[in-house]
Length: 155
Image (cartoon, rainbow, N blue to C red):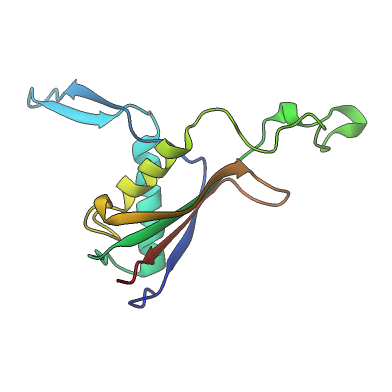
């Protein structure tokens, strides 16, 4: 349960998705145009982020002040990073430390910001500081997902 003035921190399990690119599609029922996320799984990921945030704080809180956001995205390593045969389960020496491939970190952050609008804060423009932002491969025993922390900025 959220207590005013305290940090909010929660983990969202799963494959983190990106937001940023949008597409306009016609609504077949009304004929009007609507804006949707370009990513096939973006909406489901954002709904999941919102749900886990609500589980952490217990209710919509709609903070109104300046906020600091920290996000750590954990990504599964591809199977090609591991050896085969008697070396299966062993990380190859050539395996990179960080995922320097898509998805883009900034678009992953944008999905988290958008997902928390209307649940934790009124608008993502309230995020005035970024703390640690990182995308990295899961370590042994870790599951993929996102660790999200929100801190109120004292004036």
